[in-house]
Length: 394
Ligand SMILES: NC(=O)c1ccc[n+]([C@@H]2O[C@H](COP(=O)([O-])OP(=O)(O)OC[C@H]3O[C@@H](n4cnc5c(N)ncnc54)[C@H](OP(=O)(O)O)[C@@H]3O)[C@@H](O)[C@H]2O)c1
Image (cartoon, rainbow, N blue to C red; front, side, top):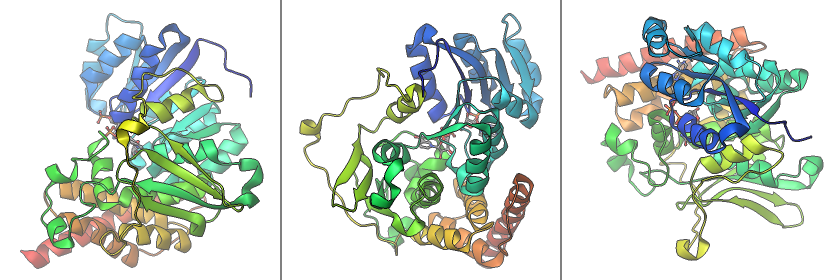
C-alpha cells in the first residue's frame, strides 16, 4: 500500500482517555504532518475543548448531551464545529479521515468504531470490547468498505508485526503475554479484600480505570483472547497466554519449524500506536526505548487459571459463539463499575460474569442491532445477579 500523502487527516475517538492522550502526544509531536478532523469524549468537556483548541480539530463531539452548551462556549472563538450526544460521536467517527483511533472504552465504542470502519480508512483499534462483541461483523464490514483494521493493543500489535499472514498454515500458535497485574502472586483470600485503589494500581502500565481492573482480574487477557481470535484466524485453541511480569515481550508467534518471532518494546502505548499511525511506514516516536541490558532479566510463567478464572470464561464464550462474548463483556462492564463503586468485592467481578453467562441464553448476533439488544439484556441480568448477591449478604 502506498504511503499516505501529508498532512494525514486523523480523528481520535476517546481523545481524553489514556490511549487518546498517548495518541495526541504523537500527533502533536508530528506537527504539520497531521491534520486533526475530529476528537471526542464523554464528559470531560473542558479537556476536550483544550484538545480541540491545541490541535485545531475541525469537529469536537461530547457524548453527554447536557454538555453541549459548555463545549460551544469553550470553543466559541475557534473554527471548531461542535456536537453532542451519541449521534455526534458517530458523526465524528464518520468524518473523512485517513486514520481513526478507536479508543472509547467499553461497548459504548461499538457504534462509533463501526461507523469509522464503514468510512473505510485505517482504523487503529484500541477499543477491544467492540471487537469482542461484534468481531465477525466488524471484520466483514472492513472487508466491504476497504478499511484497514490495525490492532493498537500492544499484544495484538506485536503479533501483527511478526505474523506471516500469507502463511497461516505455517503458524503453530500465537501468544499473548500478560503482566499478571497487581495480584499476580496474591492468594484468593488476599484478592477477596482488594480495594478499587489497589486494583487500579498496575505495576507496569498507566491506563484507564476499567482496563486496570480488567488487568487485575485478568479479564483483560480474556477479552484479548477473543480479540485475537477475530484478528488472527488460527482458532482459539492456538491462542495462548503466558504471564510475563516485565511487560517487555508483548506477543509471540510460534511457527511449525520451531522458530518463535516476538515483538518487544518498553511498556509505552505510544509505540504500538505509532506503528498503526505510520503503517505501512515507520515514524520516529517519542516513546520510551527498550534497554535490555538494564532490564537484565525477562521471566515467564503459565497463568494460574484457578486464581484467575476469567481466562477459562473467555474460551467458553468463544466456543458457545453467538451472543456469549457480548454477555461476557457486558456483565464484566457492569461488575467492574459495581466494584469501583464498592457495591461488590474484587472476586465477585468474575463470578458475576460467570453467573450471568450461565443465566442468559445465547442467541445469534447477525447484525449490530442484535448485538446491542444482547448487550442490553446482559447488562440487566448482571445487575439482577449483583442485586441478588447484595440481598443475600445484607
Ligand atoms: N490504556 C491502555 O494502556 C490501553 C491499552 C490497550 C487497550 N486499551 C483499550 O483502549 C480503550 C480505551 O482505554 P483507556 O485506558 O484509554 O480508557 P479511558 O482512559 O477510560 O478513556 C476512555 C475514553 O472514552 C471516552 N468515553 C467513555 N465512555 C464513553 C461513552 N459512553 N461515549 C463516548 N465516549 C466515551 C472517555 O471520555 P471521558 O474522558 O470524557 O470520560 C475517554 O475519552 C479500552 O477499550 C481499553 O481496553 C487501553
